[in-house]
Amino acid sequence: MPHDHAHHHSPQSLSHVGKAFITGIVLNLAFVIVEFICGFYTNSLALLSDAGHNLSDVATLALSLFAYGMAKRKATTVYTYGYHKSTILASLANAVILLVAVGSIGWEAIQRFMHPEPTAGYTISIVAGIGILINGASAFLFFKDKDSDLNVKGAYLHLVTDALVSAGVVVAGFIIARTGIAWIDPLISIVIMVIVLYSTWGLLTESLKLSMDAVPTGIDSAKIKQFMEGQKGVSRVHHIHIWAIGTTRNAMTAHLVLEKGLSEHEVADLKQELRHGLEHLNIHHATFETELLAPTEHCKTD
Figure (cartoon, rainbow, N blue to C red):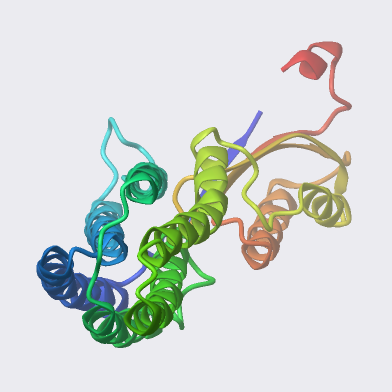
């Protein structure tokens, strides 16, 4: 049986995405330092919890940047697909980091509800206002590429979430300053926890799905099968396996049962047409196994 291995390497450049990650890391790290200092100074759990979450975002951005660098490394005899899978592992690790941060925020909020302490409302609002600008600017850096990569999407969603949370902290700070109600501070922390959990859940489930070699979201297996069986010379297609080799690259293997009478040249042209069409269906690496006869019984158990 002839085999065809189609490799279409188009590694994503770090020229703009990498710079976006680096800029986001610098901006958010600087803000985390300011927020921690002000949180301790004002005794604000809302600021401290938001600073902790922003610190996890710095780790998220750094890990994603590292994964992008790994993905650009060439394949080896051991890692024959290269290091693209590192981007999926980074997404999964980032989701776990955020869940740990959520648990920490929730625990501290419960403690503060039980033992409320006074906070400086106006200072909280000013610092959180700066956070809106920092997180908003950082999120804008990833807006263009947010739908092309799971890591970029995760960074974008987390930064937008942070900007919204900071807006909530601004409101809470003014309420505390005007009313003196101390439990507003841990209440905002609970709201932060819920928002972060909601924004992280999708990233966690998708990362787990891709790490287990499930068909990536947005890939229609039935449509792919229909496309291949619609090509002239293809009798039927079976044993289709589709998985992600990275957050931006998908692979597929399929068994093609071809009509009798096809020449080697016609088979080669057919495979080329399939590869071209599959690229439009977001399949970047295709491996075909072909035979000219009807599949035998043992093929059904492969």
